[in-house]
Amino acid sequence: MNVTRRLSHCLFWLAYRQHPIAVENPRGPAVLHWNVEEELPAEIAEVIADLRSRADAFIFLSGGASNMAKRDLDALLDLFRCFETLSARGLRFAVGDGGTKAGIMEAVGRARAASGRAFPLVGVAPAKEVGTDERSGSTAIETNHSHILTVTNEPWLEAQKEKGWEPSFGYWGSETEAMYEIFDRLSAGRASAAIVANGGAKTLDEVELNLQQGRRMILISGSGRVADGLVAALEGASTDFRDIDGFRERVSSLQVSKRRDSFRVFPLEAGPEALADLLMRELSAR
Image (tube, rainbow, N blue to C red; front, side, top):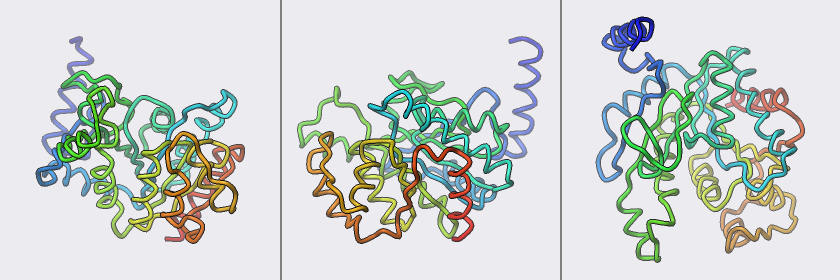
Protein backbone atom coordinates (compact mmCIF):
# COMPACT_ATOMS: atom_id res chain seq x y z
CA MET A 1 0.00 0.00 0.00
CA ASN A 2 1.58 3.34 -1.01
CA VAL A 3 1.69 6.35 1.33
CA THR A 4 -1.21 8.21 -0.34
CA ARG A 5 -3.49 5.18 -0.28
CA ARG A 6 -2.53 4.38 3.33
CA LEU A 7 -3.29 7.97 4.40
CA SER A 8 -6.67 7.84 2.60
CA HIS A 9 -7.46 4.55 4.31
CA CYS A 10 -6.54 5.91 7.76
CA LEU A 11 -8.58 9.09 7.27
CA PHE A 12 -11.57 7.00 6.21
CA TRP A 13 -11.43 4.86 9.35
CA LEU A 14 -10.94 7.90 11.63
CA ALA A 15 -14.07 9.45 10.13
CA TYR A 16 -15.93 6.13 10.19
CA ARG A 17 -15.39 5.74 13.95
CA GLN A 18 -17.33 8.99 14.51
CA HIS A 19 -19.89 8.71 11.64
CA PRO A 20 -20.01 5.00 10.71
CA ILE A 21 -22.88 5.15 8.20
CA ALA A 22 -22.63 8.54 6.52
CA VAL A 23 -18.94 8.22 5.54
CA GLU A 24 -18.42 6.19 2.36
CA ASN A 25 -15.53 3.82 1.82
CA PRO A 26 -13.40 5.37 -0.96
CA ARG A 27 -12.48 1.88 -2.20
CA GLY A 28 -16.06 0.98 -3.17
CA PRO A 29 -19.57 0.46 -1.83
CA ALA A 30 -20.34 -0.70 1.68
CA VAL A 31 -21.51 -4.34 1.37
CA LEU A 32 -24.09 -5.62 3.86
CA HIS A 33 -25.99 -8.91 4.00
CA TRP A 34 -29.51 -9.93 4.97
CA ASN A 35 -30.73 -13.50 5.46
CA VAL A 36 -34.49 -12.97 5.12
CA GLU A 37 -35.23 -15.77 7.60
CA GLU A 38 -33.84 -13.42 10.25
CA GLU A 39 -34.85 -9.93 11.35
CA LEU A 40 -33.51 -7.03 9.34
CA PRO A 41 -29.93 -6.54 10.59
CA ALA A 42 -29.32 -3.48 12.74
CA GLU A 43 -26.63 -2.20 10.39
CA ILE A 44 -29.07 -2.20 7.45
CA ALA A 45 -31.70 -0.46 9.58
CA GLU A 46 -29.05 2.16 10.39
CA VAL A 47 -28.27 2.64 6.69
CA ILE A 48 -31.98 3.14 5.98
CA ALA A 49 -32.25 5.72 8.75
CA ASP A 50 -29.15 7.52 7.51
CA LEU A 51 -30.37 7.62 3.91
CA ARG A 52 -33.73 8.98 5.03
CA SER A 53 -31.86 11.77 6.81
CA ARG A 54 -30.03 12.62 3.58
CA ALA A 55 -32.84 12.31 1.03
CA ASP A 56 -36.29 13.85 0.69
CA ALA A 57 -37.24 11.71 -2.32
CA PHE A 58 -36.48 8.23 -3.64
CA ILE A 59 -36.26 6.87 -7.17
CA PHE A 60 -36.26 3.13 -7.83
CA LEU A 61 -35.22 1.46 -11.07
CA SER A 62 -36.84 -1.62 -12.58
CA GLY A 63 -36.08 -3.49 -15.76
CA GLY A 64 -32.99 -3.75 -17.92
CA ALA A 65 -31.67 -3.17 -21.41
CA SER A 66 -31.93 -6.53 -23.19
CA ASN A 67 -32.57 -7.22 -26.87
CA MET A 68 -32.35 -3.57 -27.87
CA ALA A 69 -30.99 -2.08 -31.08
CA LYS A 70 -27.76 -0.15 -30.44
CA ARG A 71 -29.34 3.23 -31.19
CA ASP A 72 -32.17 2.61 -28.73
CA LEU A 73 -29.79 1.15 -26.15
CA ASP A 74 -27.57 4.23 -26.33
CA ALA A 75 -30.62 6.48 -25.95
CA LEU A 76 -31.86 4.49 -22.93
CA LEU A 77 -28.53 4.54 -21.12
CA ASP A 78 -28.17 8.26 -21.86
CA LEU A 79 -31.49 8.92 -20.07
CA PHE A 80 -29.89 8.24 -16.71
CA ARG A 81 -27.83 11.40 -16.97
CA CYS A 82 -31.06 12.86 -15.58
CA PHE A 83 -29.66 12.09 -12.13
CA GLU A 84 -26.77 14.49 -12.72
CA THR A 85 -29.35 17.15 -13.59
CA LEU A 86 -31.46 16.42 -10.49
CA SER A 87 -28.46 16.71 -8.20
CA ALA A 88 -27.37 19.95 -9.92
CA ARG A 89 -30.86 21.34 -9.29
CA GLY A 90 -30.45 20.67 -5.59
CA LEU A 91 -32.92 17.81 -5.17
CA ARG A 92 -32.06 15.68 -2.13
CA PHE A 93 -32.72 12.18 -3.41
CA ALA A 94 -31.49 8.60 -3.31
CA VAL A 95 -31.74 5.85 -5.92
CA GLY A 96 -32.33 2.11 -5.50
CA ASP A 97 -31.72 -0.66 -8.05
CA GLY A 98 -30.20 -4.13 -8.46
CA GLY A 99 -26.60 -3.02 -7.92
CA THR A 100 -24.86 -4.92 -10.73
CA LYS A 101 -22.50 -3.74 -13.44
CA ALA A 102 -24.97 -4.05 -16.29
CA GLY A 103 -27.34 -1.95 -18.36
CA ILE A 104 -29.31 0.76 -16.60
CA MET A 105 -27.65 0.05 -13.24
CA GLU A 106 -24.21 0.70 -14.66
CA ALA A 107 -25.56 3.84 -16.36
CA VAL A 108 -26.88 5.29 -13.10
CA GLY A 109 -23.57 4.39 -11.42
CA ARG A 110 -21.74 6.43 -14.05
CA ALA A 111 -24.19 9.29 -13.49
CA ARG A 112 -23.47 9.19 -9.77
CA ALA A 113 -19.72 9.29 -10.39
CA ALA A 114 -20.15 12.23 -12.79
CA SER A 115 -22.17 14.10 -10.16
CA GLY A 116 -19.36 13.79 -7.62
CA ARG A 117 -21.30 11.11 -5.71
CA ALA A 118 -23.95 13.71 -4.96
CA PHE A 119 -26.68 11.16 -4.21
CA PRO A 120 -26.78 7.78 -2.45
CA LEU A 121 -27.21 4.74 -4.70
CA VAL A 122 -28.29 1.47 -3.11
CA GLY A 123 -28.25 -1.88 -4.90
CA VAL A 124 -30.01 -5.05 -3.70
CA ALA A 125 -28.97 -8.39 -5.23
CA PRO A 126 -28.93 -12.15 -4.51
CA ALA A 127 -25.89 -13.06 -2.42
CA LYS A 128 -25.13 -16.15 -4.52
CA GLU A 129 -25.07 -14.22 -7.79
CA VAL A 130 -22.88 -11.20 -7.16
CA GLY A 131 -19.18 -10.71 -6.66
CA THR A 132 -18.09 -8.58 -3.72
CA ASP A 133 -14.88 -8.05 -1.78
CA GLU A 134 -15.88 -10.95 0.47
CA ARG A 135 -16.74 -13.52 -2.20
CA SER A 136 -16.69 -14.14 -5.93
CA GLY A 137 -20.00 -14.39 -7.77
CA SER A 138 -20.75 -14.63 -11.45
CA THR A 139 -22.01 -11.03 -11.75
CA ALA A 140 -19.89 -8.01 -10.84
CA ILE A 141 -21.31 -5.32 -8.60
CA GLU A 142 -21.38 -1.73 -9.85
CA THR A 143 -18.66 -0.03 -7.81
CA ASN A 144 -20.05 3.53 -8.00
CA HIS A 145 -22.91 2.49 -5.71
CA SER A 146 -22.75 3.76 -2.16
CA HIS A 147 -24.22 0.54 -0.70
CA ILE A 148 -24.76 -3.03 -1.89
CA LEU A 149 -27.18 -5.17 0.12
CA THR A 150 -26.92 -8.89 -0.64
CA VAL A 151 -29.82 -11.22 0.14
CA THR A 152 -30.09 -14.90 1.05
CA ASN A 153 -33.61 -16.33 0.75
CA GLU A 154 -33.88 -20.05 1.54
CA PRO A 155 -37.73 -20.10 1.58
CA TRP A 156 -37.70 -18.81 -2.01
CA LEU A 157 -35.20 -21.52 -2.93
CA GLU A 158 -37.32 -24.30 -1.41
CA ALA A 159 -40.43 -23.03 -3.18
CA GLN A 160 -38.58 -22.90 -6.51
CA LYS A 161 -37.25 -26.44 -6.07
CA GLU A 162 -40.83 -27.67 -5.89
CA LYS A 163 -41.34 -26.14 -9.34
CA GLY A 164 -38.31 -27.93 -10.80
CA TRP A 165 -35.69 -25.27 -10.11
CA GLU A 166 -32.04 -26.22 -10.55
CA PRO A 167 -28.92 -24.23 -9.54
CA SER A 168 -28.17 -23.58 -13.22
CA PHE A 169 -31.38 -21.47 -13.35
CA GLY A 170 -29.78 -18.95 -11.01
CA TYR A 171 -31.01 -17.05 -7.95
CA TRP A 172 -32.39 -13.91 -9.62
CA GLY A 173 -35.77 -13.11 -8.13
CA SER A 174 -34.86 -14.39 -4.68
CA GLU A 175 -34.02 -10.81 -3.69
CA THR A 176 -37.15 -9.11 -5.03
CA GLU A 177 -39.37 -9.14 -1.93
CA ALA A 178 -36.47 -8.12 0.32
CA MET A 179 -35.55 -5.35 -2.11
CA TYR A 180 -39.04 -3.91 -2.00
CA GLU A 181 -39.27 -4.21 1.76
CA ILE A 182 -36.13 -2.09 1.94
CA PHE A 183 -37.51 0.33 -0.68
CA ASP A 184 -40.76 0.59 1.29
CA ARG A 185 -38.88 1.39 4.50
CA LEU A 186 -36.73 3.96 2.71
CA SER A 187 -39.65 5.80 1.13
CA ALA A 188 -42.24 5.56 3.92
CA GLY A 189 -43.98 8.94 4.12
CA ARG A 190 -41.67 10.39 1.44
CA ALA A 191 -42.03 11.17 -2.25
CA SER A 192 -40.99 8.28 -4.46
CA ALA A 193 -41.25 7.13 -8.06
CA ALA A 194 -40.08 4.15 -10.09
CA ILE A 195 -38.62 4.09 -13.59
CA VAL A 196 -39.52 1.00 -15.62
CA ALA A 197 -37.41 0.36 -18.72
CA ASN A 198 -37.44 -2.76 -20.90
CA GLY A 199 -37.47 -5.76 -18.54
CA GLY A 200 -38.77 -9.32 -18.30
CA ALA A 201 -40.78 -11.49 -15.90
CA LYS A 202 -38.99 -10.20 -12.80
CA THR A 203 -39.88 -6.66 -13.86
CA LEU A 204 -43.58 -7.56 -13.78
CA ASP A 205 -43.12 -8.78 -10.19
CA GLU A 206 -41.58 -5.41 -9.35
CA VAL A 207 -44.40 -3.53 -11.08
CA GLU A 208 -46.86 -5.40 -8.87
CA LEU A 209 -44.90 -4.50 -5.74
CA ASN A 210 -44.71 -0.84 -6.79
CA LEU A 211 -48.50 -0.86 -7.19
CA GLN A 212 -48.92 -2.43 -3.76
CA GLN A 213 -46.73 0.26 -2.23
CA GLY A 214 -48.68 3.03 -3.97
CA ARG A 215 -45.75 4.23 -6.04
CA ARG A 216 -46.18 5.89 -9.42
CA MET A 217 -44.16 4.39 -12.27
CA ILE A 218 -42.61 6.09 -15.29
CA LEU A 219 -42.70 3.70 -18.26
CA ILE A 220 -39.97 4.30 -20.83
CA SER A 221 -41.88 3.92 -24.09
CA GLY A 222 -39.70 2.57 -26.89
CA SER A 223 -37.37 0.65 -24.56
CA GLY A 224 -39.04 -2.65 -25.48
CA ARG A 225 -40.28 -5.77 -23.72
CA VAL A 226 -42.30 -5.29 -20.51
CA ALA A 227 -42.19 -1.48 -20.49
CA ASP A 228 -43.67 -1.34 -23.99
CA GLY A 229 -46.16 -4.10 -23.15
CA LEU A 230 -47.45 -2.04 -20.24
CA VAL A 231 -47.69 1.05 -22.44
CA ALA A 232 -49.73 -0.99 -24.92
CA ALA A 233 -52.05 -2.12 -22.12
CA LEU A 234 -52.61 1.48 -21.06
CA GLU A 235 -53.47 2.40 -24.65
CA GLY A 236 -55.83 -0.56 -25.08
CA ALA A 237 -53.60 -2.17 -27.70
CA SER A 238 -52.46 -5.81 -27.92
CA THR A 239 -50.42 -6.92 -24.92
CA ASP A 240 -49.03 -10.16 -26.37
CA PHE A 241 -45.44 -10.55 -25.28
CA ARG A 242 -43.69 -13.74 -26.30
CA ASP A 243 -40.85 -13.55 -23.78
CA ILE A 244 -43.19 -14.18 -20.82
CA ASP A 245 -45.75 -16.96 -20.64
CA GLY A 246 -49.15 -15.57 -19.70
CA PHE A 247 -48.06 -11.94 -20.05
CA ARG A 248 -51.53 -10.78 -21.09
CA GLU A 249 -53.12 -12.56 -18.14
CA ARG A 250 -50.62 -11.07 -15.69
CA VAL A 251 -51.17 -7.56 -17.01
CA SER A 252 -54.93 -8.12 -16.80
CA SER A 253 -54.65 -9.30 -13.19
CA LEU A 254 -52.76 -6.09 -12.33
CA GLN A 255 -55.65 -4.10 -13.84
CA VAL A 256 -53.17 -1.82 -15.57
CA SER A 257 -55.79 -0.28 -17.84
CA LYS A 258 -57.86 0.73 -14.79
CA ARG A 259 -54.93 2.20 -12.88
CA ARG A 260 -53.77 4.81 -15.34
CA ASP A 261 -52.95 7.28 -12.57
CA SER A 262 -50.26 4.88 -11.34
CA PHE A 263 -48.30 5.31 -14.58
CA ARG A 264 -46.66 8.01 -16.63
CA VAL A 265 -45.47 7.25 -20.17
CA PHE A 266 -42.14 8.81 -21.16
CA PRO A 267 -40.83 8.55 -24.75
CA LEU A 268 -37.33 7.12 -25.04
CA GLU A 269 -36.28 9.82 -27.49
CA ALA A 270 -37.30 12.72 -25.19
CA GLY A 271 -33.89 12.70 -23.49
CA PRO A 272 -32.42 13.10 -19.99
CA GLU A 273 -33.37 16.75 -19.41
CA ALA A 274 -37.03 16.00 -20.07
CA LEU A 275 -36.89 12.98 -17.77
CA ALA A 276 -35.36 15.15 -15.05
CA ASP A 277 -38.24 17.63 -15.53
CA LEU A 278 -40.81 14.84 -15.18
CA LEU A 279 -39.16 13.44 -12.06
CA MET A 280 -39.01 16.89 -10.49
CA ARG A 281 -42.75 17.35 -11.10
CA GLU A 282 -43.65 13.90 -9.81
CA LEU A 283 -41.50 14.10 -6.70
CA SER A 284 -42.48 17.67 -5.88
CA ALA A 285 -46.20 16.92 -6.14
CA ARG A 286 -46.14 14.19 -3.48
